[in-house]
Amino acid sequence: MANHKSAVKRVRQNEKRNEINRSNRSKLRTQIKKLRTALAGTDKTQSSELLNPTVSLIDKAVNKGLIHKNTAARHKSRLTKHVGNLA
Image (cartoon, rainbow, N blue to C red; front, side, top):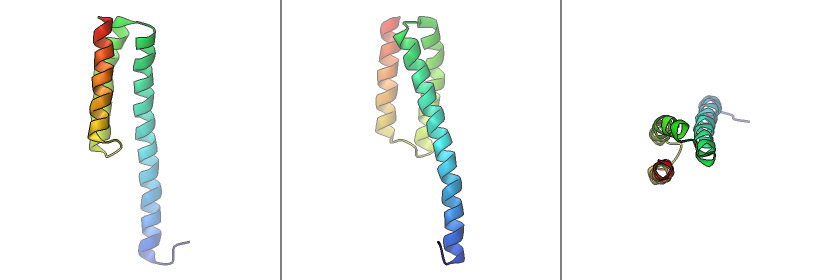
């Protein structure tokens, strides 16, 4: 257990930040899975509709520090390529 006031506060902040990060990471993974499911079902219209919100969530995750910018670029590139191949 933390002994100093500042350490107790830091524990509280870490718990709050951890919950926010978990929520954001979960939203990101869910959105990517939805798009991949649409791609697996070869549904052109749904894949095209899901691409923009997914790319947006990936960019937001980079800004929040959830994922590295190169990881985000790789995800966006591959997903966009797969959607393009359907069309």
